Image (cartoon, rainbow, N blue to C red; front, top):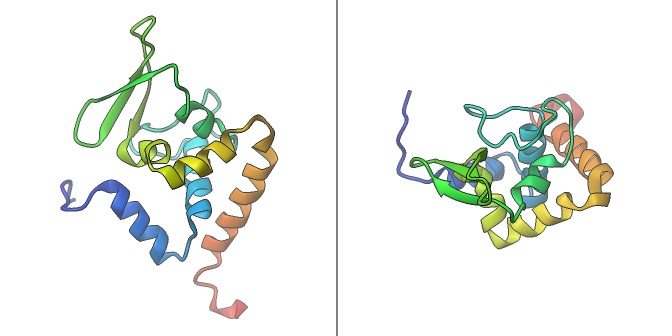
Length: 140
């Protein structure tokens, strides 16, 4: 299996979202939801204490300003608590794109709000349904 590519992981994610006909909010909520459910490469990006439960924890913890991110490889990062030096979580470039890209960060901030849990779940279900019905030609 190929491990090195000429394009960045973030670009591949955007390309796949475009091929699926997903808007930026749909892509954002799907990635955040999948991470909350524990679906990730090597456990990176699962920023929750309750994997398997559909929560907005990915966005809440992604935007946590109390941690410092450092690169640990070409596609991996580690967050540490500066007061203790303890490793708090790990992420990929794709995960951190939702905190560094201005448009994706704006969406992440919406989903990270205390009162947005219901919106997050509703938007995730809608986006998931859209993806699952993409090849359903019998519906048209």
